[in-house]
Amino acid sequence: MTALSAAAWPARGRLLFPGVLACAVVAAASTFLSQHYGAPVMLFALILGMAMNFLSAEGPCKPGIEFTARHVLRWGVALLGLRITAAQVVALGWHPVLLVAVSLVLTIGVSMVVARLMGFNVLFGLLSGGATAICGASAALALAAALPPHPLKERATLFTVVGVSALSTLTMIAYPLIARALGMDAHTAGVFLGATIHDVAQVVGAGYGMSQATGDTATLVKLMRVAALLPVILFAVMFTRATGKAVGGQRPPLLPWFAVAFAALVALNSTGWLSPSLTTAGSDLSRWFLVAAMAGIGMKTQLRELVDVGLKPVVLMVGETVFIAALVLALLRWAP
Image 1 (cartoon, rainbow, N blue to C red):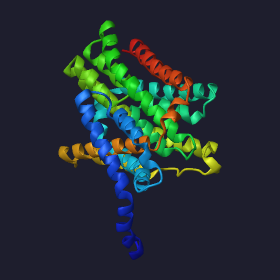
Image 2: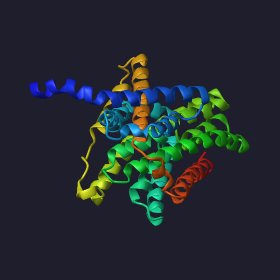
Image 3: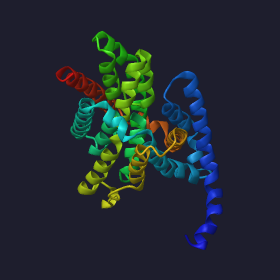
Image 4: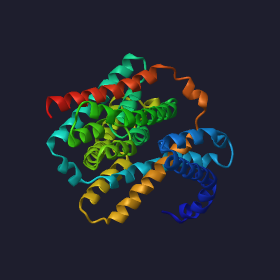
């Protein structure tokens, strides 16, 4: 770093501070509301951010909002690696691993094909299918960060986050009822919940709402889906490079830095060298970064942009949710 660039940091900090502070305040308010009312924190961050979208107009907050929505988002994705260890995946055994892998690949693949048939950009199918198959809003934000620039990318990301947050809440309520109706034991119910519900928080709520054993299994299966974030990000980058989907033909880097950091933190966490307090702090910081980034994205969006998307994206995302649930149930019945 040159002396000139180092000297520029205080000025850049003053430029970014108002917008970053605005996103942090919205993130804190969203977390408070989520803890007290039980709704997804990402959904609160999006709604509150959209209510304050006037801040993203030309003014002192705009640079910091842009910075939070883009760069803080990537830091949050990188720190997700502290949630996972290789031992957690090994402890599940081969059948849940295979079940998650098959359901993830088929859900994303079918989503991309159906999105194309419905007239959408195939990358919207990758974005919504990845969010459904991996870890909901966090996966949507991570995939959006890896995809190339596009005039409709932010609107597609916002709609995906809204959709998976709403569907995750609905499935948290409905899927335990389905598991009980089908007479699943604790382990099978945990695999079903962990392999189908979108967001980690809703998986934890649904699993431990049934029993301790179900919650433990559901959480491990869900964390394995989170671990699939890295290969899916790599697939997204390679797909866009191969097909030239970026605006102007610009290709994204083959390996985004935050994907490398994610993998490195998973590997480091797997060694056992990191204390539980450190991994917990890193995981909490990741969540804060992602919530703040979601607030920033909300601030950059007009409500009419979501209204204009129409009914077809809703049908696509509901279809993805039903598809992965039906597929997992079929796989559990075929090879319990």
